[in-house]
Length: 413
Ligand code: HAM
View 1 (cartoon, helix red, strand yellow):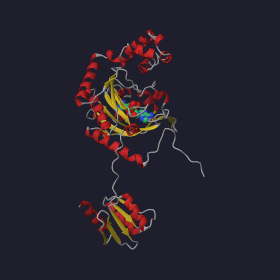
View 2 (cartoon, helix red, strand yellow):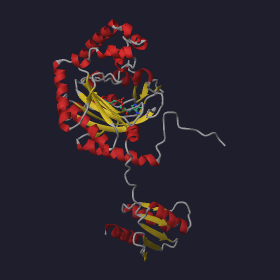
View 3 (cartoon, protein in one colour):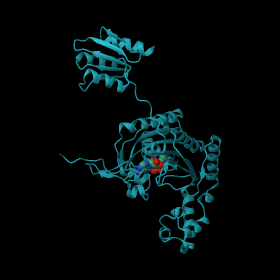
């Protein structure tokens, strides 16, 4: 026997058992987002590598370590998309969407790729739903974005949700703050853990996440970015918060919230679920006022989020949609049986045809398994006996059209 092959580590097959829950998730997301005026967009699964190195940030883990990058035959460097925001901003610029009524609101659902170490809830190919509102810095957009994701997660029954909220201010504020924090850490270096001390210049913010007791004591007195915000950024943040309060969305202020993408400014947020283990982030996002401009477009403030479909499904009670009903099961394997199935499908009935050469008894069993409402016993001479499974009636009908008419009548009773 030839050796068996397996799906690559960090990937999985979506089997029919999972398909129903996923469809239910997408149905809820679509209803909530399209109800709020978001329209669907899909960008390619691969893009020019430069889009991500410029958009996501050359120093991020995603760009430094996690991208699946390859060359095409013309030696152009391409990358499987690790996220969706930079591609949508690329599309916004490419299609001149700034001419559309603002904000341009788009949602998406599809596969993304990051070469991370696979573990529970972390995959190399995963799926996101996401939403982006491009073209305004109105704080109502931030609050609406967050509220929409919260609505979707609640409606899907995601357990133990917590929303963490922060504000990053502008890049200039951040640079000033970073210098201040670095100086503070240097001044207390001898009390920090060796790992934190070694990374003071590289990533001073990480010190807030340390478990080391000495580091924690030092960090309790550390300067906080939110205290350094410019008055207009603080005002913006307060307006976002007032709207979240008005919508009844509860959150925890987290002045040390960091996310692994460089494009954020002002509002930043993340939803976690305590049902998930180490990979507890279900979704997150924020404002990215500089990204469109960075990708060659006009100055365009924007805000959005993405949520991991696998993680939502892991943390929600599965509520699959009911399976498509089977209106008619055509028992019989000859040409007349096939013709009846074709005619019934033209009438938009859900039809399943006997395809495995079962005996009459086996065919009946199969019809019952599928929950068919009607069974048509079709002989090779074209004669048809139609059985109404629900009330047990059975009658001979003069041809395919009569059978279909009968079913349509029965269905509409
Ligand atoms: P992100 O936080 O990198 O944000 O990803 C969003 C969500 O995707 C995460 O919260 C997580 O649920 C899921 N996710 C990320 N990586 C993996 C993985 N390796 N395996 C399974 N799930 C994963 C973004 O991607 C931004 N584009 C969000 C955004 C949109 N910001 C503004 N607009």
